[in-house]
Length: 144
Image (cartoon, rainbow, N blue to C red; front, side, top):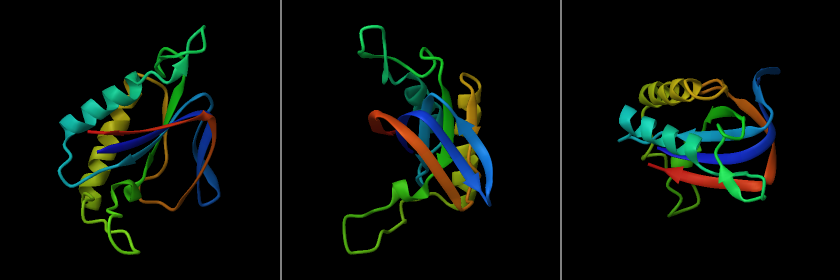
């Protein structure tokens, strides 16, 4: 399971011209699910994402997590994160989970986030338009 997290001052997801999720200060989480991922991996990744200290404290150091900073989370399914790009000129998605498994674990991750912090989402498997203002820019890739 892979999460590309970006510290944002705002982020939103639009599907068919309608905004389906939007946050102000917080994290945009692009989530990729691999074949061997499990609910236990989802729980661990959620813990890492929500606990990752990438928000500034009073001294301007990255010492606060999204919860401590009073931020929100916007989670967007991003199957291209699991692409194998090592060979050729076209990505392979053989490492990716089946759509049913990916959706199940995506929803599991979202529910775990909702238990701890205000959370918005995109629409699984939809053609989404994601907008963001990356604060910093600060972007990290976390993998379990």
